[in-house]
Image 1 (tube, rainbow, N blue to C red):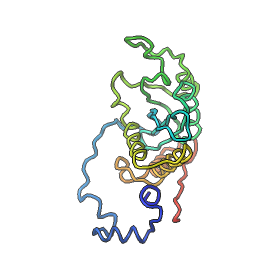
Image 2 (cartoon, one colour):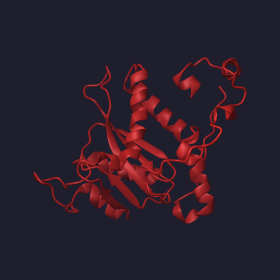
Image 3 (cartoon, one colour):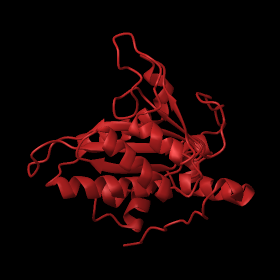
Image 4 (cartoon, rainbow, N blue to C red):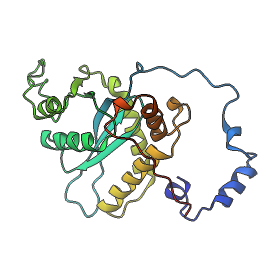
Length: 236
């Protein structure tokens, strides 16, 4: 994380010396003496309940139009999957769902989205209506055996988990200068990989998502298509 987002030339010994200058000889010293009780925003679920959202991306100098970042995050393990699309049409949303289903080791049982036209035809009228089930995204969910849930109208907090991850992406967009569309895409994918495999999450008791996923797999392998594997980072 230090090399990627702070200083590319940083060394392990340099980071250690920096921490020691600030009185930190062990990372455990940074943990609070008494852990605060976690704030339970979401009901506890087993892996397979996935939140999905779309985020606008800035237009790069070598692009003719802006792109969109489709984001999915599993509620139980906080595992994240992203894909960049040229638009946020129903076709792009359906293609994203297909790729997500193929990439995710977990058996996805439920998906939560907002009321965007790329996900549902619920808001076809002025006062809204029930989803018809004929939308391409709904049909793809049905084909994959996934229940599609939709947030309440004007209730974005229901999908707050993926919104908070999008806030992390916004921080990267603000603090980096990207040379091209490829530079932007590679940086976002590297961050997601670091997030999944190396960044400890408070909601997971200081474990990264992949470790939480592996622990779930050890206890409940029936919830998975395949065994999740870690991708260790390089020293240089």
